[in-house]
Length: 405
Image 1 (cartoon, helix red, strand yellow):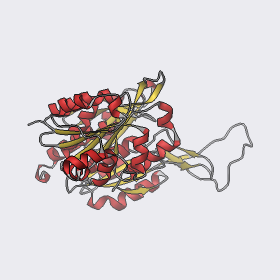
Image 2 (cartoon, rainbow, N blue to C red; image 1 turned 60 degrees about the horizontal axis):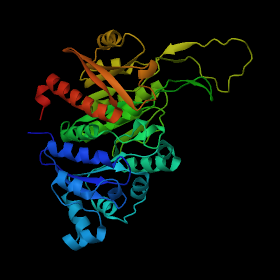
Image 3 (cartoon, rainbow, N blue to C red; image 1 turned 90 degrees about the vertical axis):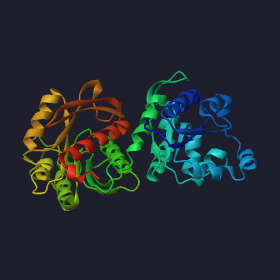
Image 4 (cartoon, rainbow, N blue to C red; image 1 turned 180 degrees about the horizontal axis):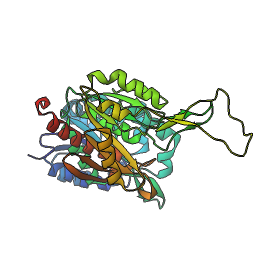
């Protein structure tokens, strides 16, 4: 059986040169045995013909709201009820804005608003449009409602510019769809995920921190939730909105993160420490801003709690997964960390040079446990999180076979 057998996917196509990729995506989804129906906006038909998508999907293409109502009685309602999942690819800045603000003025937006099926968007637009504050605010609003954003990618664009805004390739989007078949993989499990950096105050203005953006941890919290788990996300300072439906606890320092973890660990089945936790903190945090009064300044530091080791040492410890951000000797350093902390599994990633995971939309991971070493190749963090979710679930049930429901 193929991964998407029986899945009813409504493919929405909006206006943009990336619409040509939608034909390939439709074919990929059909190859995976999904049932695909297509809605095209009025702008989309200027870039690719409905006849092409009809031939690929095996169904008439819907594009006009009123024609759809005439043909089907209540076309948008029928399509909304039919779909297991709605995938809009490409999703233009205009359609993203209309969806964010609840406009329903064409067949695609009306159907999306009338459906309770999961909604996925693969943005495609000029890099300046993608970075615009209005677009980013609309993306944040949609993600806060549970909409999943796939991409965009970085690279050359049809307008001649280079940057973020390219639609993901069809095979990448299809791979995301395949990963979604893990819906009940971790059903009923309670999982704690830590994410982001910590901030160790030197004074009211300055502090010790790191480059972690929190994107990997937030993406993993979302993927684990998609797999059916109940998620508690304990996050350091990060300019990200938590996934819809995830219980997010905001903290600042490593000590606060440790306290929050231990306060919630009793019912935890799996603990995933993605956060880049500071190893040290100042012995004393000045009450007032430290003034520049001398040529040198000596700081006295003390070790922070080792959260991973604390969790792994519990009498009824959950399945514990650590992350290792390494600048050199990634695999050997991660192996040492796995052994020293007594955890079940570690995911190591490089954080130096051009392949650094920090402040990046992509990542790669080397996975290490008692059975050996494997590698998850570089891809977008949401897709990598979906792959890692399957790996965590597999290893969890191998460790606790009686818990495999």
